[in-house]
Amino acid sequence: MPFAPPGSLLKAVNLLIWVFSARMRLSTCLWQAPVICKRSDSGSKRKRKVFRLDNKSWNEIVRMFPQPHFLQTWEWGEIKQKYGWEKDFKVWHDGDGNVIAAAMILMRSARFLKGLVNLRILYIPRGPLFVNMEASTRKVVLDDLQEYARTKKAVFIKMDPEIIIYEGMPGEADEGTNQAGIAFQEDLKKRKWFFSSDQIQFRNTVVINLEPPEEDLLAAMKQKTRYNIRLAERRGVSIRQAHPADFSLLYDMYLETSLRDGFIIREREYYLDVWELFTSHAMAQAFIAEAEGEAVAGLFLFFVGKQAWYFYGMSTDRYKEKMPNYLLQWEAMRFAKNRGVISYDLWGAPDAFEPSDRLWGVFRFKQGLGGTVQRTIGAWDYSPRKFLYFLYQQVLPKILGFTRKQRRKAMSGEMS
Image (tube, rainbow, N blue to C red; front, side, top):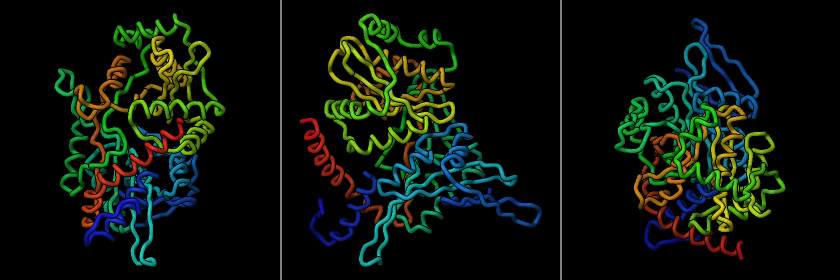
């Protein structure tokens, strides 16, 4: 085992090491591939209809929500399944059979002591999805998820739905409050969900409304951002759409970016799998900025319905004076707008909106592009097995430190 502290908790801690490694890699009915069900009431009789569940039918459900997310798509589940997770599906209906909420649930499990101990962790990335945030909807969804976690005997279930509680910068005059989001957060507290110390996705972000004309989008940017876009054009920076043959090059730039900026990324194969799968289904598009004939920056956009996410960004230190990243973002925004996208998520903003936050520099860049800060409830955990969850919380920082150190060494080796 990579980490085995002394003492009587040794065995329990070793089991929890697996838990972290898994992380690295109304009416309701449970939908399980390949068969899904829908229940509806007709008088005193309950009818059951059976449908086939595949990427098309599930993604149609995801797209019907006001705020769908690509981390809830069938394709994201396929990627996670390849890397050791299972995927399950839950859909909630009202009394008329209309969908009111849905969730793709990822599950990782392992057996110990010849099958006597079975540990599971559950995760709903950027879900559940809600049509509305009425109290009755919130209640049935949380009731079912808690029961699901108990039935699966999970150490915990984690959710990080994109439920906004505030819009705008803290303390600013135009800061807005979403009372439905606040109410949902209070529901979680009352039900003994815990604000997670392990926030897998960014809690906050910046979103640009692409509905206005291009000239209005430019006018909404900071003056320096507009200047740098034009500067990049004058200095000969060009932007092109990338193809699968470029993906290894994009990974090389992403690796360089991670080492320069001090964050950990996965192995090459993982990213190539993600990029190739989503691109092949027309759910992602990569772009490359070139200066003097050399690739110097890139980004990946992901699409669901009329929403886009700038999820991966990469750059080199070459020709930075030509401001390639500014033109790169602008051309990606134009591409998304022409595709019919109205919401462009820049994916990531600080937890604390102050210069000491590690995301402050990139946040200032995103701020310059215009858009609105959105602050969500973040990730929350519910644990039916609180002792194991407590141990997980105590051991996690040590495991994080060890695994990050090992991965950083491997990343440095890739660059050499």
